[in-house]
Length: 429
Figure (tube, rainbow, N blue to C red):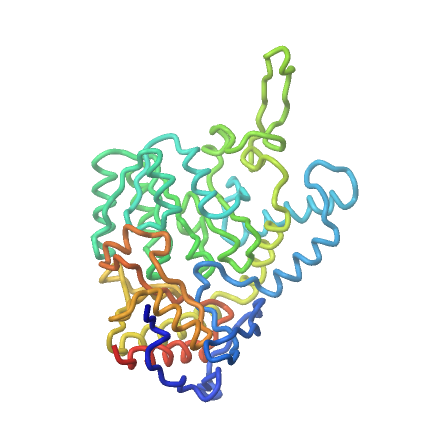
């Protein structure tokens, strides 16, 4: 079967893997692991890998790698040992909790719970909500399927921000709900929802609001105190700390009143009786421990804490300047390419994080991704990005291609991606 790689294809027009954009070119603003990794091309050459798949899993910051390496030298059980190393590991684990709380502007009485990832966080929250939930149909599966399983009311998001706000308000006015759960930034298009307005809207109708921050938190600082958000979930592996850990933070009462998410040691304060007597009674902890049964992922928590510190040290303005420039450069360049169609959900959206999804006429998303990888050493995501309903609504029934950037992306990487797509669209069909 003939594939795209069998077609007549000109040699890449880049003189070298890096296309110089002059002395003012934007470079990476943080050191990430794997930044100097070289990968093989179809012609046998090698080229430095250009990572445009940050939205799936961001590479670890070097600062995170160093923090984990240090923690490993004093690694021991947490919360259950009097030994010096156990105490050191416990201190690191709880310090990470405090760092996260400060990073996302948690209120003094919020609980910061370490989980496995965003999906785990939202499943935990779904087990704690004492009432009905309203959710949008444009959500990533992590913020759709846990709610769907408990009978959430799904609102179809109109193709405008203002229309979406009106649709949500109409649904909350029609019948009260305990919780509105929304994405902070679309994992398909990177478009950002007006979280403050949604929080005020939810509160006006007696509901709380949860935000899936998986794509928002790595790009933007969010303060629970300032925004009015009640619950926030995000993943370490998208926050430059890929060690299988996530966070759920929010108001304590629902967490303390719900049954433990998992039953086991650590969540239980005291267990009385014996199985033989068939009269075992359990007293459960309140606080984060109630939902962190079992031995916790200490290194994952340390990694998230280190990532939060490193990102905070970079500063919001520096991150915004880097991201806005590169995102605008990429989106503007793609818009000018014949046959390339960038996607958007809301026609009136004016804000997005560093994520751009697109289709290329005449090629499947997988063909595009394979061409970029084998000819140019560029990594992108193709498919429906675990957001099938909204991708289908956009008419992309075979999926799309997603290019996402982050702290380790350079302007030269964007030029390489654009040059590769120019070559692809110039191929004879």
